[in-house]
Length: 188
Image (cartoon, rainbow, N blue to C red; front, side, top):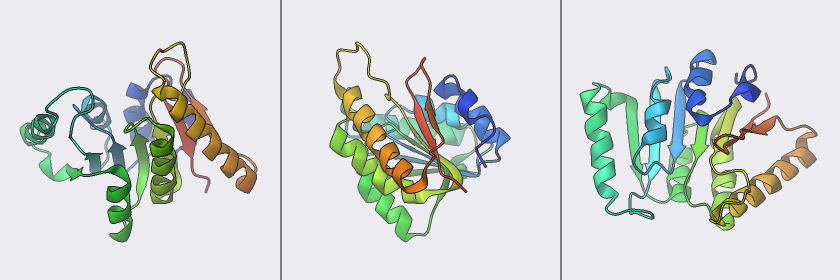
């Protein structure tokens, strides 16, 4: 489903166009906070957009207000039924969605950036990606950024890609240089 155009994404704000071109129906963002990227994803034609976060503030407080702001935003757009908000830890929400039999065409990870959390997120969300779908995330480049959080993301993504490459031989994955997003396509 995703193959055409996947490597042409230059910035994460372009994912909605790719999602439109590939007719993605069910998408999910993990680590929503204020919802800036979620609002970009809403520009796709996806029928169901899931948003996962604890909304318990890491960078600014109180983020519980951000959840209410997002709900109000969906109501103003008259799209409340299109959005599904899940409050809780990423791994727990993923397990619950799996029990419900849900799967996604596109999942974007931008939650806790510590290595252990990222690898846990990748391992628990990957089975929920449909064949031909895409698992993506933010902060995937290690740079001169003084915040060491990116190193955890880089290590976790590289480890997972190595595991997949060992199992599958070739793994369609890439990253953008502007926004440091990464993405891995699940082979058909």
